[in-house]
Structures are given as structure tokens and as C-alpha cells.
Image (cartoon, helix red, strand yellow):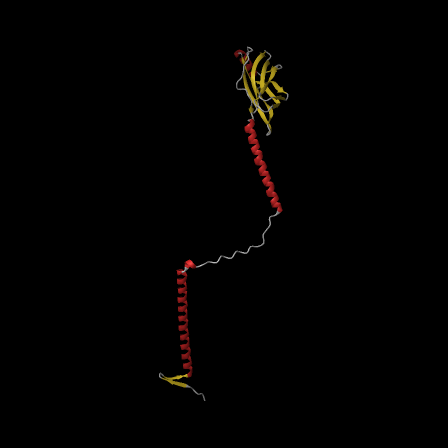
Length: 263
């Protein structure tokens, strides 16, 4: 036989199981109330701490941040140091060389030597019925060196004298030197062999005889070299392209624009 236990209270009869459930609910309610009061107290404590910190902020001291821990130091490769040192020496050498060249140029003030035609005249210009031409002229070319502190050398000198595209003669010169601030004249007595002309070229020759004036062209190159102080040797090509309008009466002309151009 099963025995049931009942507890009598002011609300009536309750079983033992119901009474235990009721007590459990009461304990849970009491625990939640206690937790709420604890949290409220913590919040109040936090607020009071913030108020205290704000009020006494001028008297607070901050501890320094801890220094980061570095790993082992890495040493630079000796090869890199060698390359850096070499590059430094090369840079300094280039800078010093540039300064030396600039100072030397400002002191010496070098000038490029020149070749110029100073005079020319026709000694003979004949054209016969056989369409043969003979030309004899005298030309003086001056080699000029206007450098006050350097002598100049001229070499590989060769010029071509032509009439209406026909080669009359080659003017050459052996290597020679010109002292500073001086010039050297080159005398060329040019006499051609008998030159056979085409009908068109023959007409130009006859026209020149009628006008008593012949036009000749002198073209060519020479090389020059001179030493500019401690800067070193300087070389240039000198190019000549000159038109000579020569009277056939033997008069001498003195061209003003028959000088070389350097390149």
C-alpha cells in the first residue's frame, strides 16, 4: 500500500512534492534578487572610481611603456662595404676631374684652330676646239692657331678643286705644327692636266671665257690636335667648303668667308 503525505497550511492541503517545488522557486527568486543587488553595487563602485579618477587626474602618474625586445643584431656583409667604398671613390674622382677640366678651361680658354683661304688667282684658263680644258691657279691657305698657351698640329689635310663638278686637282699637305698665337701659310700652285669636257661642261667653260670669270669650288678636310694645359689633348675635324669666283685677267681675290668649320 502506498502512503501519501500531505502538509496542511493556511491555503489548504499540499503534497510533499508540491512543497519542495515551491521551496525551490523561492530559493531561485532570492538568488536572482541577490545577484541584482551585487551588480548594482559593482556599478556604483565603478562610477565612484571614475569620479575619483576624474577629480584627481592631475595627480596621476603613468608608467613608461616597456621597451620592445629586439632580436640579435645583423652585421653588414663586408662585400657591400667594399662596393660602397669603391662607388664613393669613383664619384669623388669624377667630381674632381670635372672641376679640374672646368678650371683648366676657364684659365686656358682654348680656341679651335682654323684653315682659311686668304688669296687666289687664275694664271691660265684655256678651252680649245677639242673640248679640252687646262686650268692653272694659285691658292694660299692659312693655318691659324689663336691659342695663347698651346701649339696646334694639322694632319690628314686634303682638298679637292673642281670646276662645274669636274675634278681639277687635289691639294694636299704633310703634317705640320703651328705655334701658339701664330699662323702658317700653305702655297698651292695648281696646274691641271688636259681635261676632256662634255658638251654641257664645254658650254660652261665658253660662258666663263665670255664673262671673263670662272667659278671654282674648293672642298675638303683636315684634322687638328692641340694640348690644352693639364686637361689633355683635344682633336677636331675641320671641314672646308669654299666657292671661288676668280677673274680671268689674273687679279687676286681675298675671300672673306672661306674658313673651315669644326666638327
